[in-house]
Structures are given as structure tokens and as C-alpha cells.
Length: 158
Image 1: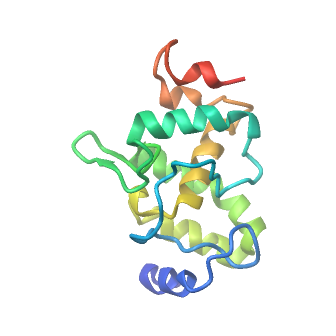
Image 2: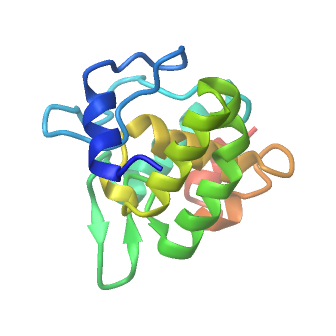
């Protein structure tokens, strides 16, 4: 297995998204917050109809800051995943990573992400984890992980 730092540094040089070359694993200071309509992941679990819900969750959880932490509460990243949910998500995204980037690289990416707190993940992987958890067993089946009541983000789900 490639060491996390070595793999991350090797991928930083070639940040193609959803192509033969995976995006970098970790964020850098120059990665912008999501203030525009950017959705870096548009794979198997992405739903165009959930963009407003996604932006609402990002705003409510982190004010669009992917590097956000609520360390005392145990939540990390733009979508404020707990450590157990983050770990589970890495297993959930593994098959798609293998399909996108090859079996060996996809597996190594997932294994490396498993050892990195989510607030350090590149936005592509944070979105991938979010949409995969959200739609794992059908559209919005995982929305319960981000509950803001009837007046909150749920109103944006189709």
C-alpha cells in the first residue's frame, strides 16, 4: 500500500475529476468554499434533483467550509460526518472508486481516506461520500443523517 502522504502528493499534481487520474486526496488552502453551483462528484449516487438539499446541508452544517470541524462533538468536513459514518462511507464508496480509477488505485484511495479525518478530504471525496450515504438504499434514504426538522433542508428534497 502506498503511504498516505506519498499517494496524496502524487495525486496533487494531476487533479482531473472523474477521469483516469483521481483528484488529490486532501485539500489545500487554495480550494474554494462552495459558494457557487459546484458539484465535483457526479457519479452513480449523485442526483441533480438534490442540489438544493445538498447546498442547504453544506450551509447548515459548515457554512460551506469543507475544512470545518466540530471536534468536541465529533463531526468533520463540509457535511459534518462523524468518525464512524466517515469510516462506513469509505467502505461504501470503494466499489465506485475502483470503477472510476481501477481496482488497485480505487482500493488504495479508500484505504488512505479511512485514515484521514474528513475535513481534510478533497471536496470531490466529501461529495462522493455524502451522495453515496444519502442515496445508498434509494433516493434520499440516508437523509436522516442530516435532520433539520420540517422547516429545514428536508423541504428541498424532491
